[in-house]
Length: 425
Image (tube, rainbow, N blue to C red; front, side, top):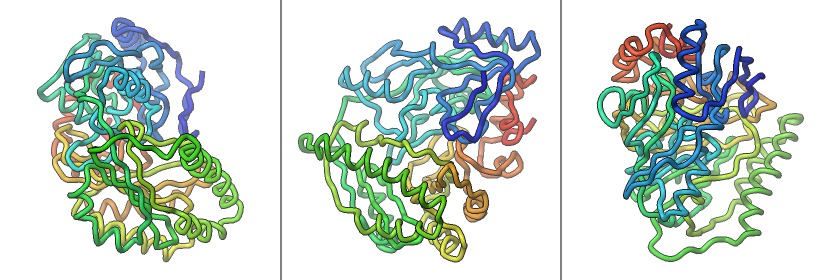
């Protein structure tokens, strides 16, 4: 059976597909692959735009490895194939929550951490930085649990190259509310206030609409008051109808008639209005993403964010391209995970999207040139053109990761074409 990712730009037909329901069955699949001379990979829900999860050998599906395995006072252990949105609901039911997360929740927990999924936070990093333990099956078939040391720091964002993750332990805390403020601002006003906004808010996220001077700024902070939401209809109107159904229509029109994209973006910037609410944290962190797109995202040192954005804007203004999707910006603190894009530095993320039906590799390549000049690191699950030569120069522990991989999987049982490119053969 052919596996195709969410965006439809990656697909493969493996020799065999399995849905293991226990670590023992994962170890069995790893042993079978080794004896048969095949590769073996565990995929998630297909939200990576790269080929990071693909294999033409034995493809493991996560459907049988789901559910909460144990709950402690401040930790929860969950099977690797559990979708993030299921984890959120189960934690909330127990009065618990993750401190931070990205906005896409259909991913499996293992897929999310292995590719370095992150949100935006002043002092709390991405999902991998909230991991306190990993259970994984190594290439020799052994099942190990790690909570410290080199393997732990390497495998938290391990790309599936060190082993098949079967369970993840997260640090959790009592459930909390987030106070969310959304406000339209001009491009220059946002950049002028960047340092203050980053320092003064728990979570900063903003979008710039290409071909305009308009941004939408989202500031989320721990709520000190009670819950207050726009109501069910207003939430549906904003998050489902306008941000997805209407956006899908405007992208289809823009695909046929690119000249209408700038005025549509200008209209979007004008109709944006300020809003304020307080709700359960995971409901504020997450959003509905039904319009399918292709994405490239780079992590740059936070001190370079303003200059990088100005260069991207100048690039778009002088180009013939018509970019319908906003450019998204987020920030995170340094990470200790070796291959986290935020490893060892305060980080800003710049994400560029295009409608799936109108791919624009020239746009991505030109933005990538700006980002690499600043020592940018590409998101492992999003489109980029980098290889071992470049990546080994922007990660302080990259060669340590490769050396560990050489020791644990010398025969590249967990290898594939993507890993050959980014980690070396």
